[in-house]
Length: 237
Image 1 (cartoon, rainbow, N blue to C red):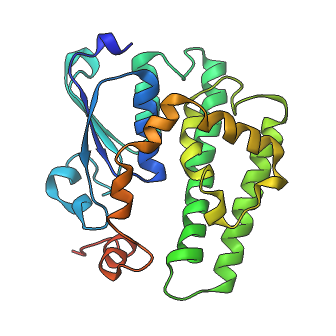
Image 2 (cartoon, helix red, strand yellow):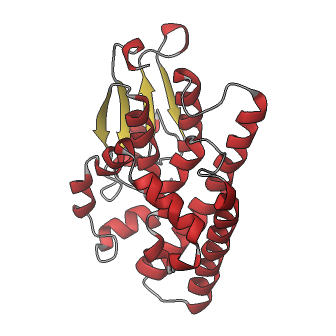
C-alpha cells in the first residue's frame, strides 16, 4: 500500500509504549512518514501547534496530508490512529464485521485495561516520590490479571484476534516492559510465545527502535522538572 501514499504522514511522537503503537503500524504498512519529536519531559505536548492536533495533550498524533478525498486529516489517540491506518491501507484490520469486532474488542481491552494499568504500575513502582504499598500491590496485581487473560486467550491462537492485527500492535509496547511491572513471565507461557513472535517481526523491531536515543534524554525517575510536567500534566488555566 505504500506506493499509494505519495506524501509522508507526519508522526508526532516520543518513544513510549503509546508512541510505539504508531511507529510499528507505519512500518508494518510500509507507509512513508516523517517524525516530529514531542519531548513530553520538556512540555512540548502543551505547545499550541501540538494541541491543535491533540487537544488531550498526549502523544501520539498524526497528520495525514492525503486523508479521505485527498484532504489532510489529523488524528489523535493511538487506538483511533491504528483503526484509521488499518482502514486506509486495508492491513491488519479486517474489512468484514465479524473480524473487525474480534480485533476491536482486544484493541479496546488494551486501551482501557492493559495500557492504563501497566502505566499505573510503572508510576507507583518506579516514579512516585512516595512508595505506597497499597498502590504498588493493586496495580502490580491488576497487570498480573491482565497478562493471565492474554495467556488464556493465546493458548489456542498465535495472535489475539487469530491473525496478526492492530490489537497485537497496541499491546506489544506495554507487554515488552513486563519486568518494570513486577511480573514473572514464566507464569505465562502462551503470552511469552506471543511476545517472542512479536519481537521477531522486522517492522516491530524498527518501530521500537525509532528515535530510541531520545528515551535517554529525560530520566523520569530522577528529573523533578520532567516529573512535574508529565505527572502534574503541565500548566493549569
